[in-house]
View (cartoon, rainbow, N blue to C red):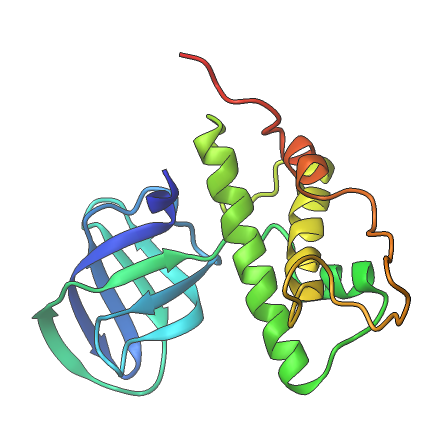
Length: 191
């Protein structure tokens, strides 16, 4: 079900950096949302491009990247719809500090992974959410907690990293069970 976030690119072209991609389908893609493009061409590939136009008739998506002009060509790239239920600033507030440098880059990776994971888990549980429309405060909190947990586990063999010299340090309450409950994924769906 997580494949919902990925769309196959069949054709691509650009005029002065305005890229038009023909997809297998454009379901779930809206003007103004963020997409990442992989495997089309080095000139077209980018992270977090903003969709400027969507045609359900021609099955095309348009975005701006660079300043290249390229005639239409066949390709087998992927458009990834960027789920944005939480952002870096939200998770920074949860952490209580603002990472810098490489730590900030890593936090962005954790936020992206948390968004995609939460979206996929809800799809697997039968929800029909949109990647650009947060389903509610509980889902936002669960997604943020998961992204924060990923960040806090950096460099740890198991659990959260700690600088304590004491033997056993109590771990924070919450965890995956609480996160799944907030996401509305507390029990498997029975057919």
